[in-house]
Length: 503
View 1 (cartoon, helix red, strand yellow):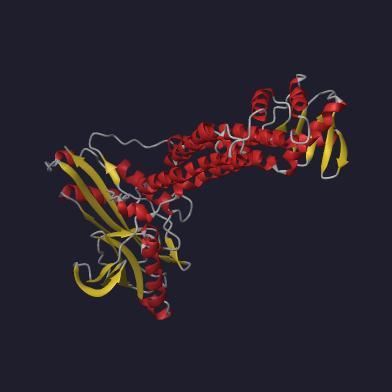
View 2: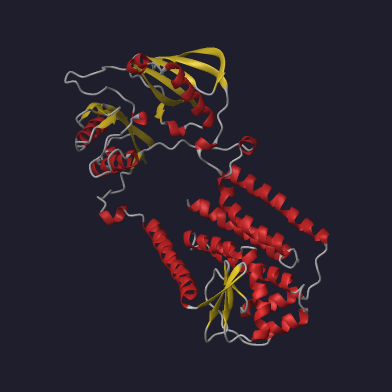
């Protein structure tokens, strides 16, 4: 998420930089308006663009990250207090969004109050709101606010100016950036964009009005008095001191030559480089497109296979028991081509009720290829009439629930399991067993049965004492809420890798 936000900000900096250096001094005001709005929105989309063609052209190295429990003999793992599990960054972000939302609602309420409490004069296509005892002038959608202290000879020109804002829906632009300020309040570029678009709005209105009145008189009207300014960021203000000088400079500027519109072509190489960057910077395995290869059919878990003449994205495993082939993975770890092939396989071979009752599917990652595993179910119904047996964790309807987690929450289950092991495992044991230096792994395989108890525990470890200690730790696990499949309690298999280093 942080990487995404950084990319959005960087893209917006580049877009605004191009605008300030190449486009802001040109008189193509409408095109500049479109540029600012479109680039502000495109910058949120570009980090999500991942073109496979670019990913293939530039080789990437990537590592499959397992849900491991990492132990260190030198580290003492203490039980976490409740406040240590809070993501304070998320809390800070949400508080900021809430505060800016409150500010937005407050400012909107001020505008609505002005509409309700003050004199309203209905005109053709707009409503004129007369503000007593001040000289403010601004617009909000089809409402034009005008201070009664503004002299009559100036009011007509101001109304003409604000009508341009109203007819061209400039308020919509400002509300868009106001919304972005709420959800990305920490992004300074949103404020920069909002300032730029406000100035462009004034240029557009000035350009339209100055065609129907004498330009010198219009400029003098801007400079004649010091007016009050309303501090609301999503209204179009006629008298805003910080913008008046720039507006006058732009009104006295000669029209830009049409050939200068070629500057907008700068967007082509800029967008191309951004897409190239986002496509090549992705480091997730699921973002890499799988390639078709001659399919291998494995028999059991002995890694013997027969190669077919058919090219597929997935290999195939036939097993009449629970022998795994490589690391078990979930459906979400497949790319789109692999997922489509897997779903078609399920539809073709498991559409019959009989097949569903006899077989179930698992997915594996073996030798860099994803594998569909077809397993025969062990027992259909237990002796007490309980639910089905041996449903894989990756496709379970409702996963087992670790005490204290929301029911069926797989992510919380995994995290709680890892915390439990880290808290109860003796991190000093491995350092006293004279093991060779390097990274070591322990694999614990067990099931959570229909009653929530741990059964079928098996451990593979680099030393018998580590194996015994791991089994003792796993047996201390609290009783779980059992998983469910098709609304029935089931046994669910679980594999937990434990990693530690020996120096």
